[in-house]
Amino acid sequence: MWLRILAASLTITSLEAGYGAVRILHSVSLRVGEGETVALLGTNGNGKSTLMKSIIGMVRPTGGSIVAEIDGARHELVGMATEAIVDLGIAIVPEGRRLFPRLSVQENLLMGAFRKAARTKLRQNLDFCFEVFPRLAERRTQLAGSMSGGEQQMVALGRALMSAPRLLLVDEPSVGLAPLLVSRTIDKIQELKDGYGLTVLMAEQNFTEAIRIADRGYVIVHGSIEFEAESRDSLDNNALIRSLYMGE
Image 1 (cartoon, rainbow, N blue to C red):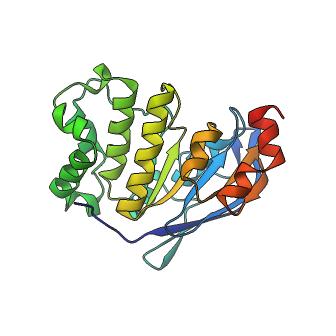
Image 2 (cartoon, one colour):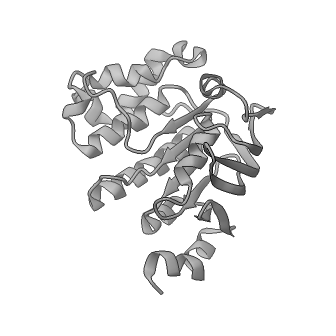
């Protein structure tokens, strides 16, 4: 049974961020509307993960704003601690999954349910994860580190869902997966978005897979947004994207 929730929106304006003296993001602006799936496209090293970490509070921006609107209330995320951002209903599936390999599947999932709103519906959310990912129900006692890459990605997605999010950030879901598993993972993100009422920002370098589920998107190059597409078709037919991804 799907557990539909109220969606959220995200607006980033003139964001500057980096690591020490090295600036990675240069006046980045983008928006993710309520109930949308927006793709952030770019090859390795162009700032996708830095932007995701800035949204969730793991990197402290040096300028600009990140505003999340949740349940009709506006929240400036810049300056907030990561745990406070998660407590608003914002969850991230990090690049590389970042599971606890010596904990079981179920224990990893429960690690995602620490925020108060999620703890009150822990059993309901756990049952939901096992409904969405039947494979995890079958292997709930298996150590996460002994699972395949595709199965670990399921655990990472499930762990994020255990926090009962309004806004889901997915960072490079295709990394380390075989092509068939990439397609299945992307399909599952779409299924979750549609059934759960999520707003999704997905950073991805696999252009072909990303545009299958994106409502629209952005291309980031050397830390700057070089192109904003207002539709899936405009993503598919953009000259910059064809140059970056197809060698045209």
